Length: 542
Image 1 (cartoon, rainbow, N blue to C red):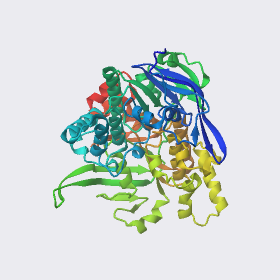
Image 2: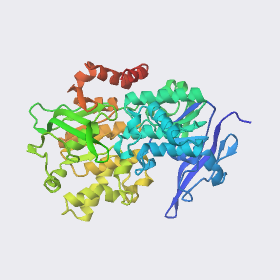
Image 3: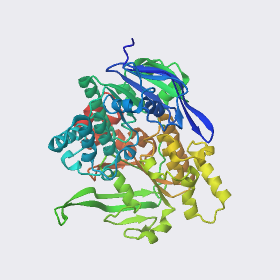
Image 4: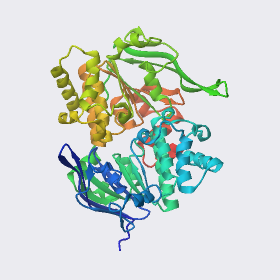
């Protein structure tokens, strides 16, 4: 008998649509031993997530099928197991964290209720015991002030905080096999280091094995024992972590390891006009308590931020999840209320109502962090990308509009022939590219990019950075680039703002801030991002 905890043997996955069958995974085989971490890496659409979903039979059957293969867990074939049997395996023996936390969390229930539900079903905990365990789990995964956060709803948390809640949910049952599908995609580098350390500790303490799906090779170096590299639905190379990184054999593996954002940020002209500016900007959310819902305090999401971004410049905004980065971007676009003057292209826009803001909307666009949540599941990709053209360029003919949609999809590396498909038919990385295309099709002057590369594999990340830089040069675009990936920020931003708890702790020319950070927090943040050896220390220092 095999000593493997999980064995995937000759597995194929096919999807049938409109009478056509597409092979997404093509006869792959690998195994995971107890206490071992196996990383599955590759580009978006390579079949990584489909493989993980197949293990627990979570694919949309009967549209999905398995032309070949078996998935053996402790010798039992999960693919042949009836639904009641596989339900006993899910959550108890094998658990999974999905890439898109907002699609997994119920928007109508508090965080406490959702985690307590799992504890009640699998462990019989209720009342105060369940609440205590929920707080412990949230604390373990780095949620600040868990005693108050348990009452929050998913939409009240940042993207990174929602992902940490998902990890807490998955770890609640102390599974034997933990499947992590891009679990750190939405996390800033310091919390990423904490989560990776947490997973290592849990693995050692509980004897847990992991299947870790990621496009971040830096994470693979830190956490994996063995690596499987996927391309086009096939595993093209397997080996230990050291073998893969020191002596990769396949050309695709070598290209993957070499891929990272390169190039220099565009240098703005000193006399370039200011496109958007804010002075002492504040966004405070009231905390209400009691029967009369009186305001007893405020959450200071953005607290006295001043900035100015010139035409052709990229402003990089970095900081931990919950530091106020996204809130600042939304306020500059007048998508949420704020206090303090905002000037866009020489005109004050603070306090303008919906109708008065509409003429500015074509010139200012945003790419959101969560592409799945921002793309309508009922609209085809052609309709999603072309929707803005219908609103802001109503005189375009259907043919002209379609031509612009096709050009936008090509710009972000997507096959235009897929434009009649729907968002759920694309991988997370592909959906993010669709979101970028939707913003760029209007040829705006100012674009807020909220983690636009976080869901993309390394090769596509580099391509998107090159694309954004090329578009900026051609059209003299101004970007506000929000990210926790400091390597991407270094390649694109000419000016950097570092935020923590709603305040700016440091800002200046990117070259100066990256070379000689002044704030202790900035130093710890950069240490976590750029040094594998000190990542854990940098996280702890914050």
